[in-house]
Length: 167
Image 1 (spheres, rainbow, N blue to C red):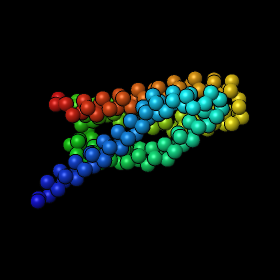
Image 2: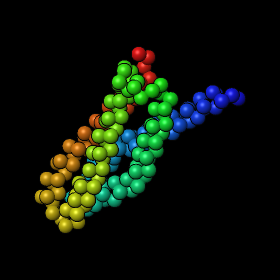
Image 3: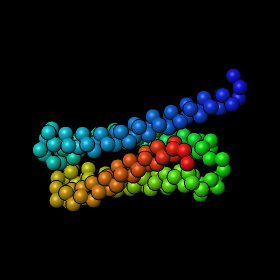
Image 4: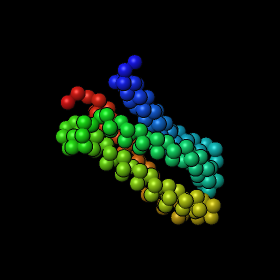
């Protein structure tokens, strides 16, 4: 086995890890939005209790998602090393697709951080305090940010597919 084939295997393994982590993150996020949150309404009609339950599930998911995001970023950086001949290629098609993907990933990470730090903690606090009016107001904005996050995830996946298309 020569050095080129070893490098090819390593590239394939790192790409697989990247895709597996992205699938886990994106799939889990959509599952949470489409299945878990609506299903929580079947468990209890008490909004405070339901919100605290969702908060506990989100916290558990977050413990897995944070390292997963680290894996996605690190493997993405590694993958860039073989995808691009040089960093200048980011500004020439099809590298511009990759550059757009990088920018959207950064925006997504910022939105996730802000959403979790600001909204997540306040939503749980309002639920514990049974401040349902404040909870309702905050949730409206939180849902919009969550929807934007899901759209960003889907767009990033689309860009990943487009990167595989011949120019």
